[in-house]
Image 1 (tube, rainbow, N blue to C red):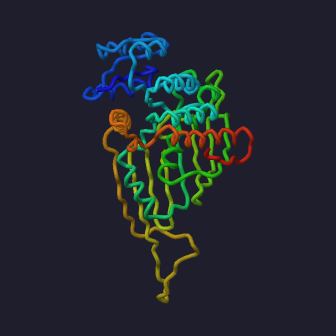
Image 2 (cartoon, rainbow, N blue to C red; image 1 turned 45 degrees about the vertical axis):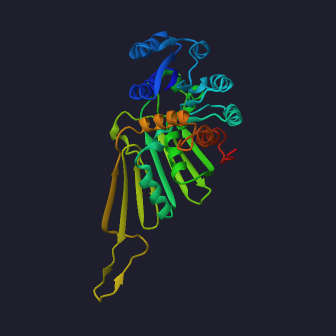
Image 3 (tube, one colour; image 1 turned 180 degrees about the vertical axis):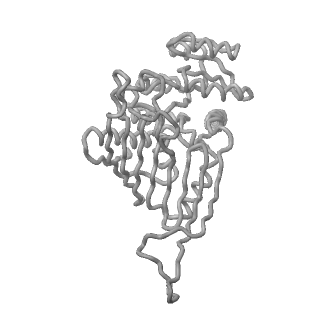
Length: 350
């Protein structure tokens, strides 16, 4: 039984808390910290045992947790992680890890030096859709990837400014960028266009309302990844990731479905019996679809895998440790750099 504490009791902290309440066979919930006292107190009341704090250092020193989940806004990462590393406490940190790559890289290096077990909040990697997706990648040559995520604006004030959220690419659509990385491979170069023209009714809103990124991957494929927060209805767009090969495609709706669509080009005979294949614009013939559906909450497996790794001392089953998650952060921050400079950005992968 390990003692677990949470730093940050807002929306994402609540998401993890719903999982922890089902893990009482392996953890003891002992501490909850938030700058808004009522949030931490609400968590403590739910467990009837844990204690509420507004200063995470006081919490760490008083209750001495053995596992900590860091669920704070993007700009608050840094000192919290350093204090956890200094105390040799394994931690799970929510994406996007940090908005400053130098800080994130330094944290990564210190984690490695201490040999700490860590994980990050890329729960999509734990979906049961990952296995058939990986199989598709192994058996087919992916040539083009098309990814989209269209939605609205979260109801938290820090999200409206790119300086505090990182913008939609970094704070939300990083899940799409990450799963594409995880399934297909590492990016080489990005070139991103962004516009702020379509959100006009929120005072102080200064991040992109729509962006499109072209990606060149190290393995050769190209991708177009678009994201927008201008939507007011689910009918706005059908968000998904399409992996295209020469003779079939796969469509991934994250945490929903994975569909393989096989197309057989049809041929027709002319009046003299000759087969006509056309000028390259293939038409659909027989069509076969294989559909896999999401089962359960992938976040439960994500959280429990990390906790069990800390208990056993074996982090090999963690699909997104800090150092790997950092590569997805670099991927998305490169898009912001491209928007700002108007130039392609090479991803170093340091």
